[in-house]
Length: 82
Image: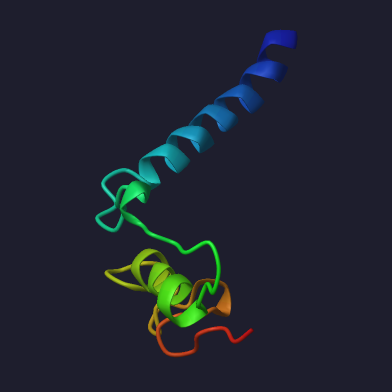
């Protein structure tokens, strides 16, 4: 009885971990972070940050396109302003 009580939550966590791991597998937008060059000063949202949002969050079937808007966030046409 005690084994089945602990087995079910363990299996749920194991399946969740597998799903999370596989959801990132083969992401075509992932690049080597060593390729990015950020200045020590004068960091620009438009030049340095916005392209990251576009490449990783809204392009090529990502979660925050105009058509999908996961969490109501559209990074294709309605970029955040700071």
